[in-house]
Image 1 (cartoon, rainbow, N blue to C red):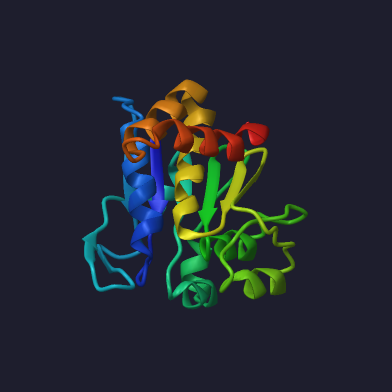
Image 2 (spheres, rainbow, N blue to C red):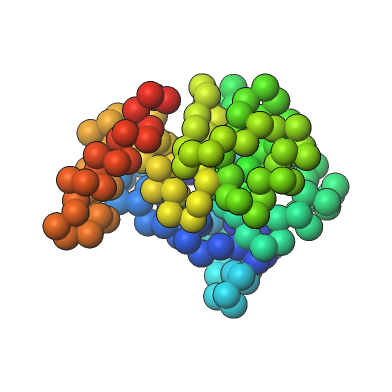
Length: 198
């Protein structure tokens, strides 16, 4: 099982790395969770440099893909050569997008007739792409999910784990990363946000 987290230059660390951490906490030995990028190395919006673990082609072949956000997402969607490489397919993959990553799914035509979540900055751009934007942190329809707000990456990760390994595995992963003294509250909140979409 390969889960790829699409990560571009200018990426938001919270989106890509929180999801990476939680998905790896699912404890599935047959899972490979990787950062997939168009270049061997990407720089975050705050200057963190990270090596890619997978290519865009690897992401297109993955079982599941999360699309992170960043300050250069509008440049990504304006790059026809780059966008043409993204052959994502919800009929064979679980797909999720965080904040401005939702714009990438919208421009790929993967949100036609599906409302979506995104951050407040990206909202008008997603609406311009013809997608209705919801005022909530998470929404999913069949194999496509979107989330809005940096810390909603936990909901995307929990939804993906629940879809692939069940609700108990998702609860366990969220419980593991939640703050001490608030673990039950975090698990309850995550499940409340994703349960109706499982």
